[in-house]
Length: 155
Ligand SMILES: Cc1cc2nc3c(=O)[nH]c(=O)nc-3n(C[C@H](O)[C@H](O)[C@H](O)COP(=O)(O)O)c2cc1C
Image (cartoon, rainbow, N blue to C red):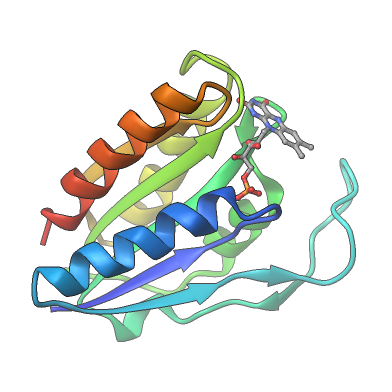
């Protein structure tokens, strides 16, 4: 299967998991591409975001979307990407977020809900999701490994 991993990452955490996930998909015999969403300038709270690169998710058989949590919510760059994303009828999909604070109530569940809802609205089937908490190294490594194993096995 041709899998697209579409990522927004500001400081590299989400990107590092996405890179490991790409290798895990390839190890299972899939073709996997990692593409980054990028933004013009800095993110300013309550100001609209202008995307510089918005990868086309529709060209893949299956997609994984990944982004960090910001301000107890999905970050505004992925929100902007989801708003402009085209149809994904009959595509398989998954998503994950990274976040700093422990507990899913500090934005993780809400961010996953936002990505999943947008994917479903575009016609995709969301088969799996994951949240990786960054602060504690042991927890991070455990959650990252579990997320990569689960997501790489979705398609
Ligand atoms: C402006 C800003 C707001 C953030 N808000 C939250 C938050 O509400 N909850 C949380 O758990 N982490 C929060 N974080 C931490 C990031 O989600 C975390 O460091 C993430 O792994 C960064 O991913 P990246 O390196 O891919 O950009 C915030 C980070 C920034 C810069």
